[in-house]
Image (cartoon, rainbow over all chains, first blue to last red; front, side, top):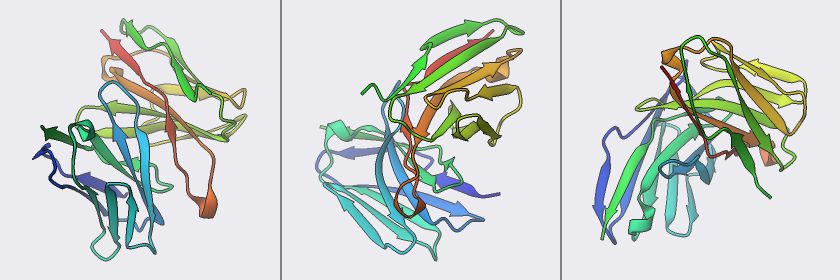
Amino acid sequence: SQKIEQNSEALNIQEGKTATLTCNYTNYSPAYLQWYRQDPGRGPVFLLLIRENEKEKRKERLKVTFDTTLKQSLFHITASQPADSATYLCALDYKLSFGAGTTVTVRA
Amino acid sequence: NAGVTQTPKFRVLKTGQSMTLLCAQDMNHEYMYWYRQDPGMGLRLIHYSVGEGTTAKGEVPDGYNVSRLKKQNFLLGLESAAPSQTSVYFCASSSPGLAGTDTQYFGPGTRLTVL
């Protein structure tokens, strides 16, 4: 069955820096991949979707890349702010498989 | 619009007790899902429904039952609760979009503890 893995460690970064999160998957070729944000005690909220034929997608300070050869997606938060502190989840298309998430903490 | 709501928000059960979690959505979405989230394991799909009157098993269905009698509601039942079912439960809904994409809208979660 398919497997999805994200950075296992929490990510602590200084305000203004770029946070880069990794999502790797195996045994599957997704038609698209999604990224969600989850704040403590709340449900995940959709951020971005990238299709297999797209290399890069941007939304404000967020950027997602998708490398189907490496079976990897990278999620970047540029000019990070303390309000970006949260857990970020990646999910494989119709398989409804979510990674365990990477917790990002941005220090002021 | 309230989006996706879940009832109750918190619940403590004793082993062997039963309960039903209610999920409601007001976005007229066709698809609805139940997940559980445990530390370090991410979201795992329990059951899902692609329309009123239909349900299907997800990754971890054992010990749970579901029903979708109305399009806007999706119920998750625990017939005989076990400590292993202590978790946070999330409901989500979606409506298939362009080119078959499926973005989900999540509820706030139900924190269940089984003693």
